[in-house]
Image (cartoon, rainbow, N blue to C red; front, side):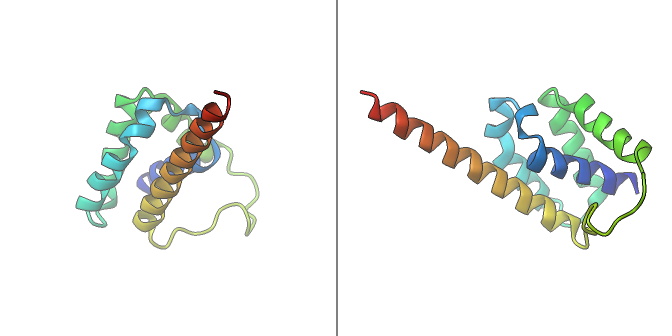
Amino acid sequence: MTVHKDIASFIYLLNKEPKVFQPTAWQDLPQLNTDILKLADNESAIAETIKTWCIKHDLGKILRDGTRKEIEDVGEHTPTTMQPLTNITQTLRTSIEESYKKLLAAAENQSDTSDDSK
């Protein structure tokens, strides 16, 4: 179960807390996605890969705290709290790809506005 919590916490960070990622972490997201793809659906190996990646990018404590908070702050279950992750690997890969695309779009928009100021 903790494997799912680790992966779900990472997905949460990507989607809801993107500011915790440093620019180098964003640049390395495509490589993380490739590494996850190579692991097929081996969720234990994927969780370890995510942990290692997070530690490399100084996000280990944030991931660990997010997992703990999820465990400690169980609260009352509601249907909208979190959708069940039937294929957590695909959900993870989709989240990484979408987050990276948003980053690229934001960078492109920022460069467009800086060109306009010239």
